[in-house]
Length: 264
Image 1: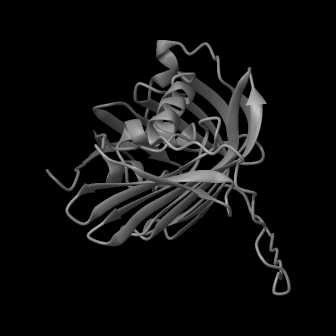
Image 2: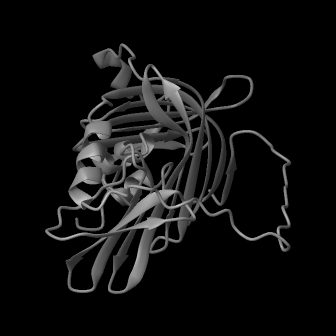
C-alpha cells in the first residue's frame, strides 16, 4: 500500500516568480474591528451547509502511501461520510464509510475489508487529515474546526485579503483563522506546544445553489506528516441521500478484519 493510484497521471508545473513580489490587498477604508462580527458571520456561513454530493479529484500523501484519482463524496454535516474511489473506466477501487461511531473500508486487491471505530487513524486510510469524522466533514465544506476561545486579536492580512484572527486556547496552544469580510474562511492554523499541528486552506470560491463554496480544499497535518487536496468537479449541496446510500457491503469472498484506534 505504498503507492496507490486510482489512475495514472503525468503532470508537472513550475512557476518562477523571482522578479515579482506578492500581491497585496488594500486595507479596507472602514475595517472591521470586532472579532465577534466575523466569527458570527462565519457561523452564519457554516449554517448554510447540511449535505454534500460531489465528484472530485483527490491527491494525498501519508504513511499509507500516495493516493491520486477521481472520487465521489457523500457527506452530512452531522458527521456521516462516504468516499468512493474510481478508475477512469468507472471500476470501484476503494470505499470508505464513517459515522460518529463506526468505520468501514474496502480497497480492491487488499484481500480483506476493515471495520472498527471511527477515529483519525482509520479515516487516514483515504482521508489523512488527522481529525475525527465531524471536523473532517466540515473540512470538505471548507469550514475549519475552530475551538471556543474567550479572547481574540485581529488584524487585516494584506497577503490574503482576509482578516487574521488569533486566539490562545490553553498553555502554548494557539489557533489562527483567516476570514473574509463576508464571513468566508480561507485558511486556518492550529499550533500546539508552539508547533504547527495543521494548516487548512480553501480557495476557488464559486456560487453553488446560492451559497459560496470552495471548489478546492487542502490540509497539511505536520504531526502525521500528511497532506490532502480535494478539487471538486461537480457539487450538489441539496442532494437527496437515502439511508441505504450510507450502507457498506464488503465484496463477496473478502474477509473482514477489525482495526483498532490508538486509544484502544
